[in-house]
Image (cartoon, rainbow, N blue to C red; front, side, top):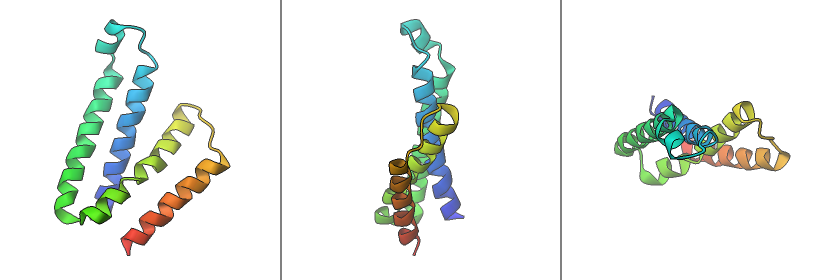
Length: 108
């Protein structure tokens, strides 16, 4: 159950960053900034991810949990490819594979 919470924390953090990015792409001035719901939702996701991170610190060692936040990069690559049309290159895939390998080593 804790590991699912870690996955959720990293996904929520990546979703927050994605919403902030997609929200800022639609900002042309101060009024757009204030009225942009994606920015508020992105901020809420960031806060939720941080809150979950704090709760998880109670259950897991810091030396295990903090490196696992790198899974956020995995989610970010997927979100950016699917929703922003960014290219997934071989170099990005190798980087994500290295992150996943490191995370799996921490599970042991």
